[in-house]
Length: 213
Image (cartoon, rainbow, N blue to C red; front, side):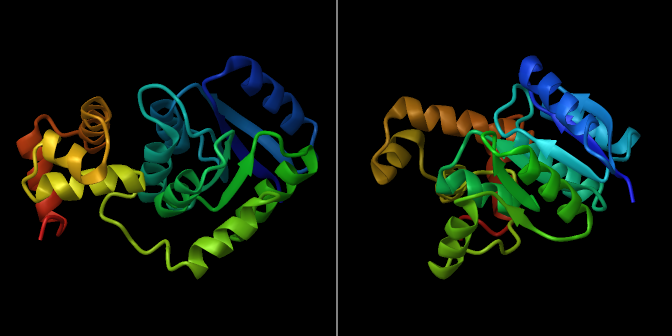
């Protein structure tokens, strides 16, 4: 079985290096490369990869939103996150978005090869140090239960819940002990990820999904 792989990363040097590594591996065929999440979503449909290697931090549409949309629009495509982000929020958000694997960019070639071939068979794979963290998240009660907005990070979902409850930015900043600027940035991120044209539309989407009750 040949595994068809799409690489999504906004750093051209890293992307080129990853393409070179993958093309040298037996049983793996690179079918495309994307410089941002929007392009990754489009190519997931046109190139029909088995696996997408997805960076999290990309311009325009980020890796989390791209992962969530690919899993909805192309459910046969598995996503392996390949990132420098090792914090719990990023790992948890990636799992909620539907990622089947999570590796750090320092991973060995053998780890990347194993992850690609394993998720193509329907397995889940986590890199060194990540598996233990995932188990700890589950042990602490944080699960990958279905979320109405899997593209949002836990903090963004928290902000959206408070917006749906009718709180303004100042009240949210006080509740979460954040600066006004941080809250404004999180609200802007949520607006963009939900493709909402206004705060009122964002509130309507959140309440339709059961938030704010």
